[in-house]
Image (cartoon, rainbow, N blue to C red):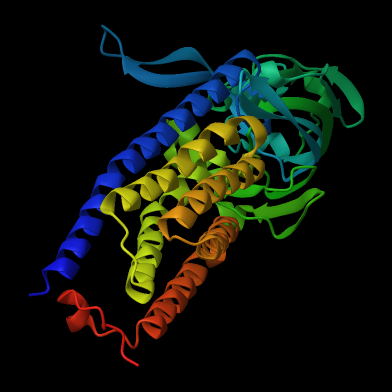
Length: 453
């Protein structure tokens, strides 16, 4: 006997389900546009330089060695056979320091853009070369060749200056190629063997320094290659995301940019063991994972915000329909399901407007324009549906309040769940308060006196 009310509920529920179709299509459009944007970033990076990873420097000492083995000849006599083998000794720095200033640039391709950075870095530190290169046996069998310092740079297209290595205050020019497979692409600087003075049981402290102007896209990584590693970065980018296995020990982030400082040691990174394991046995997973750095990507771009906003679409529609239903109950008005549907479509089109405008004028401006357009349209329509300009103004004010709250939810990522929970609780309380005197049995039977005095 409560069919009018039941049919109304079923019709509203069916409309909400049908409105999920255009909302889902708009959600797919957000994913597609985001994929296009990411492809543009890759295209821009392919014509300039990708994310950069700096590994090194590493001191490399090539050598040849005479190896002797005992064999039995055709006369069953034991003889010594000699053969010459070659190899490389690698020494990691005891101190590795980087001090860098990073500026960012937005490179556009059509309506899409990628964030490039220019890093002006100073790299310095020192090696401690052990006595006799750490060789304990058969030193006389070794012949050492010209040593070099190798630096791994993942995309050498980003190098923007002529590199000169200062080694114990003596300059040596870098040449292309790291000459060390484990480092990948990069540069190396050859210097005379007599610079190394480690004979007669003496170790040597070998200081190094060089300036590196490096361009890249979106991310900059470092490997904690030193026994002690110190990296300090300054940038004008106000939204850094610190990535990798090690977080900064100090950081400061403001609207003007950020400052961050990392400090690691062999005890915390175990980098030396992983490095030499990779050299000896080609097991390089742990070595490649030991990195840290910063991402200069906008953590919440217009596509992320649009996707986050559309997750609240069904809630918006439900709250709007609930407001209509309240007017029906409290003011004894009749709102046709078609009118519910038209208002629901206007709410859905808000997200399409938001997505298309955000690509051109930014998310904040697009949100303001789209919400104002939808509020004005719905307010104009609702004032006729509810048969009163004042009711339309009140409905418009409530809808404007909801859009303002949604923008707050999108901006306050850390408090979005808390704010959303409080909002729903308050709205439920308002609905319960306004309908506390409604006789739902009488309303379900279609009686006029459904509101108790």
